[in-house]
Length: 109
Length: 111
Image 1 (cartoon, rainbow over the protein chains, first blue to last red):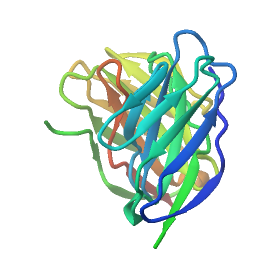
Image 2: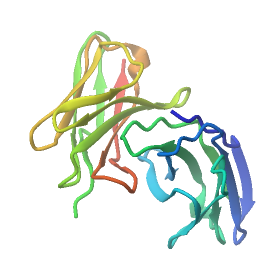
Image 3: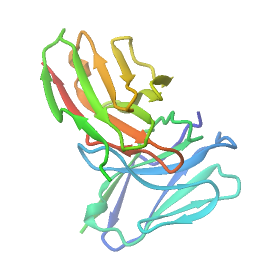
Image 4: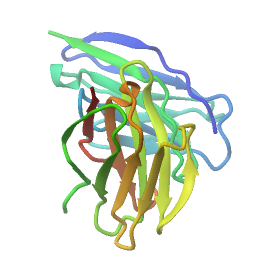
């Protein structure tokens, strides 16, 4: 299973764009990259998933370079409600997800 | 459609007792995974079931067990509870590619 490395914490201000980068040097050919968001005392919530290049949905964008050894979650114009822990996972959709420590994002007014 | 339902929401047990937690996945999802979350250890993978068979298992002692029924509902059991088992237990279901859907969890407190 590919291991991921993310910053432990990040601070931002309302209205800014936030980019959280995840390193996964040992990603395998069959692995997808998935990001989750978690609020206190709730289960993680799926944000976005990608395999390569760029993926965009209504809440975020995911940028994956050609070598796939890293990925960047981009949150446009964050608000206070985006304060949460963000997890990056790589897995082959074989349903054996191992979470890392995640990145604690704090959005300030 | 209904999400992942976990019951009970909160539970208080005494050391040495055993506990059973329940998870009803999203209709049509056949994969159910369980996680333990504590402040010190983060999200720890317990096990994953698919079509009533355990496919993957994390590094937890044998006191932690689970099962899945033919309707994909799953239960996990913890025997001989220890204080360190106090945690938020999360269940997630999946129906293919596109990520997991998590329930709100069961908050277990062992006293």
